[in-house]
Length: 343
Image (cartoon, rainbow, N blue to C red):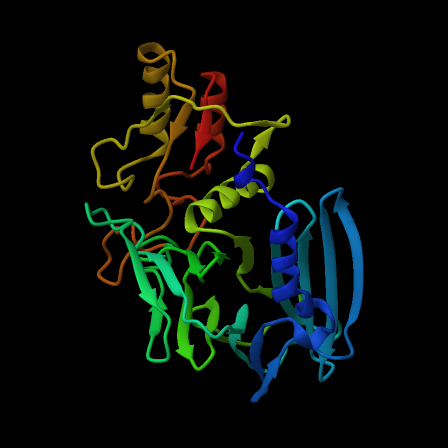
């Protein structure tokens, strides 16, 4: 094990230097939003702050307050004791007893001025778009003239954009993640002695009814000393320790995957009947298969011309015409065949 790729005290001190102020008072958390026509930064000063240990290495800070007796705001923040990482997600809801809030708009899960004299390099990525040019890394110098804006296509978080970026200074860097499975957006703008970073859902203009919750993307920031390779390795170690799913305390093992879209584009021609038939055949022909895969197009996806189009997303219910009993019969068939179901 390379000790250079393990977190050290200087990494932790670097993280505290740049993020410690975020949690000193409710108004310091680096978010912004417009409510009822007025712009706000941070959480209200009437907020109550509480802290608890999630486990030996994670401390949760919850900041909860309200505006105008109509809008509740709660930030859930995590700081790590074993990695130089901070995270936060902010939730907006209607005050109990009220029917709905006023208009909430331009919500940014991160609105941060990063002060540093030397212009850093932003490392970004163009994501996946079914092309040999996908996942291409780009580098942009964030000097006073720089502006970089990125958002995905069609509500798919990695389609022609990638919600992971890296800032490289001379001798240290910052790994950034925008954790939201939807239409996020980010902006970097160079300015004198630093740069501005903004990120959130690309469009937010709404009111919130009683019982509803509006959440921002989870913002993750990791600070590291050294070069880019070290930053990559420390990120990988943190991700495997704290994010990668586990089963019974162990990392998931590779599984052989099998599928059958029955000849259509994506799974537009998939039905309960043909999926059950294919699973039964797969059990006989491929006994080593351990996962049945159903990709895009199983949901209701009719475009404006009345045609089925898998890119028309937004509904997690199986198409009732093709799957009148939902996915329960398919899940049972997979279980009987000794396979998991991946949707």
